[in-house]
Image (cartoon, rainbow, N blue to C red):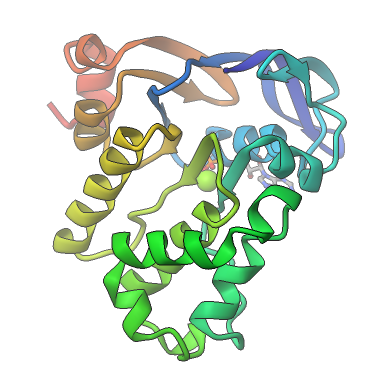
Length: 234
Ligand SMILES: Nc1ncnc2c1ncn2[C@@H]1O[C@H](COP(=O)(O)OP(=O)(O)O)[C@@H](O)[C@H]1O
Ligand SMILES: [Mg+2]
């Protein structure tokens, strides 16, 4: 479904990604793991068109997408729930959700999709008219995820969705991600909770200093010395 081949991405003169390749197949949950500053967010931003790779390519459903605008990449079916949520603080829950539906395919079905989002996150329905900035951290994360789903994505990319959440909510975030996959949405997930992430994902990539240093079946990565030492504290 998604094929990232050998990309280099820069911020000005500073190179943040070095020859990164990654693949996501339909209906998979693929995890991206790595310390702060490893380049995880940069990779998602390169896929979603917010950054352009200096070299290499990104293909989605057989079509080359690097160089397309972020908007047209969403149109093709990739939704990006960014790090730090990036909600519209002074807009209501409902308005934030609508902002996620600005694609030609999603707009006409937005009422129906909104109901589906409310089924996944009932708390959002109760707070429909509240401004986003008045929500708790957990509710804000649900809203960010809900907004991402409003675009009716085929592939949904989540950048640290459980960041700053209490353990109970953290559990809920993982349950939602598994439920989305059951509904046929393919997932690329960045997470700091490495053990839980490797338990729910099919495959994973470990990034260090802008390079993929390890990749494989998540089950197997749980047994890798590098992963145990650096990310599981064993
Ligand atoms: N907007 C930016 N401008 C310049 N450098 C950046 C910017 N964003 C990230 N970086 C740098 O790129 C590298 C990778 O960052 P990032 O992708 O945010 O890592 P991660 O998400 O894995 O924590 C880091 O060295 C970071 O300091
Ligand atoms: Mg990041």
